[in-house]
Length: 386
Ligand SMILES: Cc1cc2nc3c(=O)[nH]c(=O)nc-3n(C[C@H](O)[C@H](O)[C@H](O)COP(=O)(O)OP(=O)(O)OC[C@H]3O[C@@H](n4cnc5c(N)ncnc54)[C@H](O)[C@@H]3O)c2cc1C
Image (cartoon, rainbow, N blue to C red; front, side):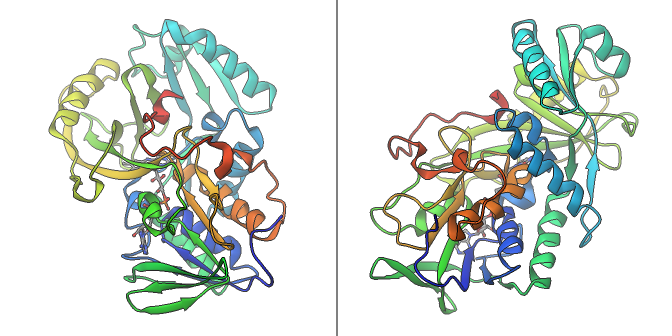
């Protein structure tokens, strides 16, 4: 099935975040592609991301999606200046969580993923810098890692440009023009651009560009990061991880610092939200990290920031034509704090929607019609709960 009438030649992508850049690289292989961004590449959520890659965990219910995403980071590694840093991940579990965690580890291992459950003794032996006293063990993922999100986006831009895509930056899309129910062009502050299809990958601003009577259930939320300098630089074996009960995740930096993320909350007025981490979040991190990890007694605060992403009711993105959308209009939004690791599936999903070419993994989890109704005041669910 395809969502365009007639020949698909020119695709306009609104937004040069990770969703737009990945789609551009994919479609530019055999289409004319123009990416338009109101500021620059990776200028919003993408550039502020922690860059953690753990699709095996977050798509554990759809293993082919996790496999596709994992494979992409390995294939793209070393091209266009992009680097994927492989590092193990531990998801630390309390007594209450341990039965489900063991079952998850077993299911993923049965699917062929390098995942196992380690009891307190085993995990302490492996990672002696952690204090696991309050915990019952951890799920160990040996296929995870991280990327520098800005470099990842610019590498995709470079790959897309090599395939002929054009990036028009500092240019805002103000409207979408429709004739006889089909998209024909977009209006920008620098003039009109003809289009056979338009992919709106504008992050939390995506709804603003949808025509009257067309909507998607996304809402903006804010999420924060703090970087700490430990007493001694972290070793090269220090894992990525998450302490679910504390709603915190962490990953090492290349220089041995520690990045800690959390502090998520939905927002009513995203445009005026502070880009700095809150003092309360900073204090929470300063209190909790030394409780769980040795060597942070005299840790220094390096920096902190906050960014805004789009949440959806079920924490999965919407990569599809919304109900009643003009022919040729798609959205790719609602990445719920997982947009970097999910990005490899965005291009193939858009391609399947537009041309019918099989993505190679199930795309139903990203369908717009999976929601019974469009409710943009749904209760925000953090992916740190998954
Ligand atoms: C602090 C933080 C930590 C995160 N950590 C992780 C992580 O560890 N792993 C992970 O996988 N994900 C993480 N994420 C989530 C990830 O960064 C996002 O899900 C992802 O970047 C969303 O990409 P996007 O392309 O949808 O949106 P964005 O990156 O926000 O891009 C949207 C683009 O659209 C442009 N735009 C908007 N309106 C218009 C318009 N009218 N005309 C033209 N251009 C327009 C904007 O300028 C912007 O560049 C994190 C996010 C934050 C904020």
